[in-house]
Amino acid sequence: MRSDGRIPNVLTIAGVDPSGGAGVLADVKAISALSAYACAVIAALTAQNTRAVTGIHPVPPAFVREQIDTLFADVRIDAVKIGMVGQAPVIRAVADRLAHWKPPHVVLDPVMVAKSGDALLEKEAVGALVEALLPRATVLTPNLPEAGVLLGERAPDNLKEMRRAAERLRDRMTHDGSRWVVLKGGHLSHGDALDLATDGDRMIELAGPRIDTQNTHGTGCTLSAAIAALLPQSPDAPAALRRAKDYLSASIAAAGRLDVGHGHGPVHHFHALWRAD
Image 1 (cartoon, rainbow, N blue to C red):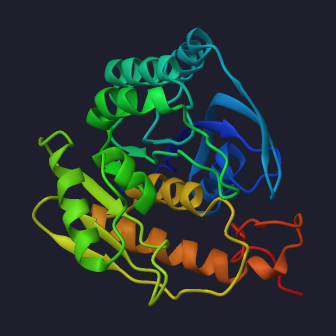
Image 2: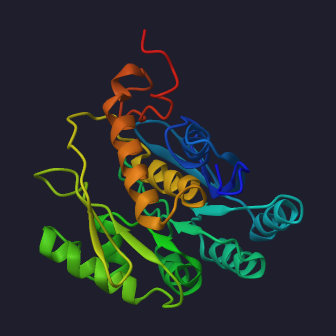
């Protein structure tokens, strides 16, 4: 709940994963589980399950713009999460409308590759994401391969390189106000699942247990949506980031209670709300 007692309205702008483990459906679950009201703008459609992405159908940029404008004209939006946007024209349409409506929090998850290894962002769209959307973001949440692409170099593969990459990514964001990079370290092959968060002055370690499970579909979507849901409800960004990390860790730990698909299954967004028996 916001400091004024109102339930925050949180918008996800992303693609649809029919299996419900990632994309808009996962975002809506995470936002709802964390006591915020979820809204959604569809930026892409996919044919997808827990094992593969077999097709992608972009939504026309003009219709993405219309969805955003129609929603903001009526609904107070307290935070926005951006996930799969797929193509450069859609990215520019989203950036343009966010510049117009100016929501207080924008969490950018630079979705590039699905858990199955299938590409979700066209190569020629990376430049548009960096040039148009990155300046709009208040929180950027790349994983290690995505950080490498954004920086034009190989992905970090140890903690020292993670710190350097997080600092360099923060340098590329707009310098006004409190803006954060959350660099996710799940791709490291050893130790805890450690993420690093920096606003350019502070470097915060967000540690969580490394859980032995293949049910990790949509973890990036879930974390970024959780951050967007919690920013309007938290005293500061670090508090929101820590709570979002704890929520994701618990969602992964409880994922075995679900039985969805035969590949990388989803995390359990409602682990704290559904009865275990």
